[in-house]
Image (cartoon, rainbow, N blue to C red; front, side, top):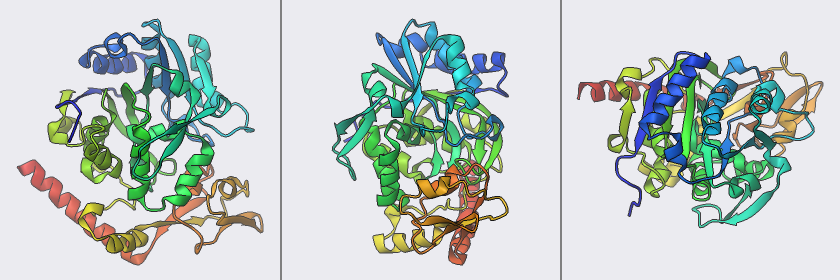
Length: 399
């Protein structure tokens, strides 16, 4: 039985760019529609802010992490509430201060706010009655905080199709456990169940999404920036993900993290049962938003397990090294959970028989030296699914 309140509210406001005045107006508008920042914090004194920072870093123009100007405006509003603020994410060590090139170090220094690499703060084992896991290791600043505020970026994802509010919290567990989960849960439906297990441990009080410039195609890092021009906010991150995915052309409940969280009563995924405040979704829908080549209108619960496993195998994307771009830096070698990558003759080489298609290598490559290829049947299925999706969208608008 569902335990969440009916009609959770998602606030939507236009924001054309990252100019300070426009950001301030858009973010404040969303929060006012939710009752204001102070009302959302209630009597909380310690706040942890989870940003979305991928590593290794690329330029801010590639739109793969929460824009520092966006983070700055949210932090300014928090400062007005007189609370103890910590900002953080889990980043590799030994590569210098990765918060510096992202712009986060400058923002937090100017505002006098603590910024931490969660790897350096320690993790605490937390038991969970999950569907696929029985424990997580959660970063200590997250557990110490009264409230967590989630600042995701709206992006596609070549494995989970979409990454937003729910998946952004994956960064509060250590790198080692994340790699192990990629190794163990090679099907996107089971991997998504694991992400929802994590949601039972860490439930952000507020999610404010940077959808000013999103990321389309083969996200979360190898696609392209896409002008969306929006800020979204909600106390229900699942509902926010449902609204965000509808805006960029997905059926919300076909995103596994949204579907499983909805089914387990951890948020509202049914778009018809969500109150949209501010701009209407139909007025801000993004035309021709490119989904990952993996994204299809097939859904796990409608297929027998053996058939779904076969189809997902055909739809799986295979990373392929572009030798002319590869610098043999070995970052893909180090992140591969099954050791399927090695460096041969000054370029990376992938053993396709060992590859589990988790795409961690594709996500981490800063030189775009990994492209994705697909099986012929997968291409055919995707084409058919695309036709179906466009037809379904047209029918929905008529009705």
